[in-house]
Image 1: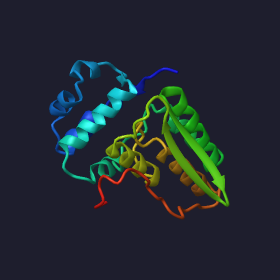
Image 2: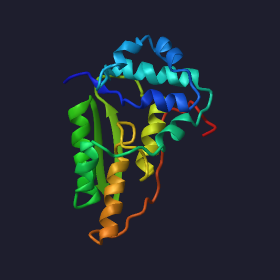
Image 3: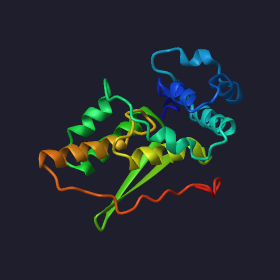
Length: 191
């Protein structure tokens, strides 16, 4: 298994818009800016986590990940969005997205359906460390917000949009979240 995690091209713009100093974050994460001047930047799981830990250290706002995760971005040139949008059901869309994630990085998404509820679990396969809190928040915001971004941080929102499109076409019944619990380390008890 390759230990490479895609890093969205617009990540630094999103961080800058949140009021953080990108260069300070890269220095703290010990990552040279030149690593991100390629068309499809990648890093190891450890580097990806270091980047997000640096974002946490530079940003005092405990809600930063939730704010970044609900940002709406365009769907242009996004294969995973197109695949999910053309799924017959929400479950099929989620399975396609989980399969895509396994192909592009060492993260596994488990989908368990029981009693009409789907539970999603995200596991990073090449580390024993818990993911940075801000990364967990970004993914959570993307999963629970059907208007969320198309990038790696909010890719599961695409399945929600796909299901929404099926409902609008009359191909599927409307589905609403029963609950959206967030389980993570209790670093920010105020959230």
